[in-house]
Image (cartoon, rainbow, N blue to C red; front, side, top):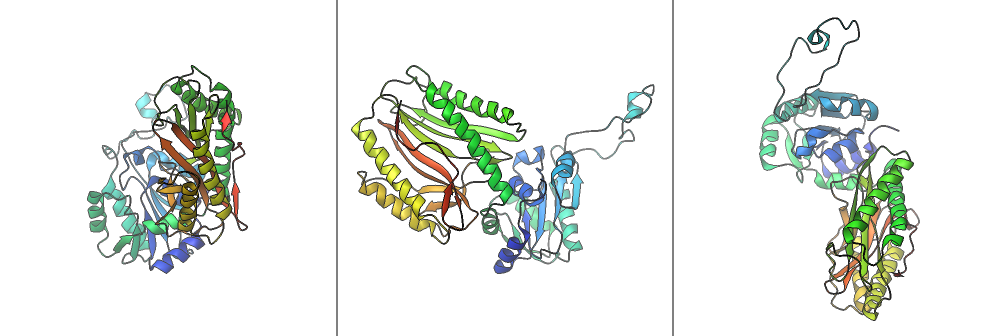
Length: 410
């Protein structure tokens, strides 16, 4: 399937409620979300103007985009946005023409007549000029524009304002967050499959946790297990795979070998098309001590409570409050934790808005995918965590995980 993930009807409702006439998206992950195509290597600079997506509030008005010319293949394969202007970036490409090969090579290349020189990276100001033309063509030259100011560098912001002198520029970051928090069926499918890949590697990892095996060997085993299974399943969209495995009393990932009595915390994920899973389990090599059991019981009790609470209309701040009180009531009265989970989607990090936190203003809605987690890191005892990725449904919450929850003694 191809096409944008963005729901134009939901975007229209959110923009109209905020008094915004259009969204200007600059972050590469959000450009792919709006267009269905990855804008490519130029966006690795993490600067505004490498690519742009324009989403008018009126869902009947076509979206538009500015893309690097190197992304033409991705756009053709994945985007249903018709109005896309391609601009040159630093990468020079050409095509060898069909026909007799007895002509000189230079005469058989499609750009043999030359053209403008390519920029050192990309031409931000040219992209802004195209955006201005796209706005003008839609009658939005003097519009109120919601721009991703969470992403926009100060120097790039000044140039954008200069390129759009008649427009009113406001922050559209919150609208983008609220748009992306409700996942489409395709996004949910990507997150499910990423979770499945990760859990496959978890199951293979457990028998490898043995006395004498270094932490780094366990980490590399997990990474390779995901990559291998992705190849077996025919996936060509494994963006990356990550692991935060800790071994022993120091919970911060030293490379020490496993020893008898060590706690092993495995917090890991697979990433498909930029969509990251996030799951975690805790193990102990040998017999768990009473202290270890106390910690794990408190964390698992709070996780169970949070999972039971999650459902449509539930305030995430209320979930955080109940969970932290539960941990404290179960033998850890001094426990502190800023959040008990976060949104999952396509990002440079596995954590995105909203957060299950005391200051959250978010309410659980069907279609959200959240990582629900109860971590605790105790220097001198080890790292502990229970974490699943959870889909909010019309009826409540559904975990995407199937790993056992017990504090396994290996």
